Image (tube, rainbow, N blue to C red; front, side, top):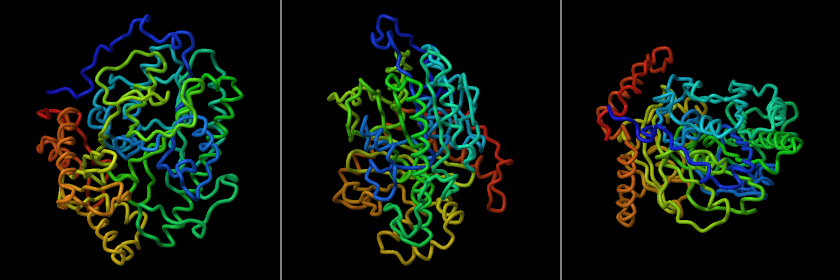
Length: 492
């Protein structure tokens, strides 16, 4: 059996103390990682016209905002496992939701928590981890371990953080995971936000391509979640200020993937993959920067390890963002890769994607077959929408039909068509871009040991997932997963 790419790295390479930056030896910075649920860059500093996010806007003003930041897969567990391991989902094994029994291949996969603990950091998490096995992440402190989608005791996030900040002089790593803006989109919780928006105040997100009263109402309450999130992050940063440790704390804010609306979460479109990424590093980063490089949350693990003076982990696909944070000129990646497998047992439909600064290519690994994720989203949240889709302009209607039954390749010119409505894969005028992206995608899949290059493994995984579907409905109790034992056989 062939080992997963990225896991043939034991023992971890340990740097000698002489090779560490002097600043890291003298005073390692604290690290505060803030993660929100199910939201893209619908934030004031990213140009959203309706949302009110003064706290995040100020964080961006005092730091670095990455305009083109992406997650490796638009799913909660998949995104979080990638963040904490620095590996793509097909490399670490967390290809679906932890609540649906999907898991990493190996508990001893190197991860951010273990690495920072070895470097002398005290580690904590507030909010959900959502990765299997949880034992792979030996946090020193855990609070509010549930998803908390009912938004109970929201002030506890900041109060638990305040206790953690003051508990020791040891440098800390704290991950704070807020429940907003996950469904249900709750308009107001204990006065937050103070003035909720309604459907009359907003328009649907532009990547929907559709406009109905329900979409406006859902968008308004999604924004209300974002407004509340901003207030909660404000309480957290105030607690950090009171601790006296703010000046020596690196603050990172990300969303775990795009909104659970149309053409977002559970897809390979920009609405699902693009996220906010804001970094404040006082005294170290160049202020008021907006970076336009293609960056991934996979880049955070090598970044944080470097900043902490921790031993690097070999063979990670991401790159340290430190040169970008400092405003240095550096040769950066020209292509960024993402993927999709499934979310739960309802929506198995594997995809692989690559993009550069202009074009994006999606390869559907089961072309011509209906994508179950399409009906899953519409039937669950938008029962009346098919009529609206049928009546939409041709390019919008075709985009939804294509989403339901995709061809093998979808090519989009993101400069001319940022919301991915017009597939150019059969357009001869863009054939050069198509060939280049196909080549890059194929090379990346081979380089990272993508197990689904083997059609037999794809069939076997699909059969395992399909076995849990009874009378058209997925039953978690019937899901029996053995893929960690065979996923990489003959993949390379």
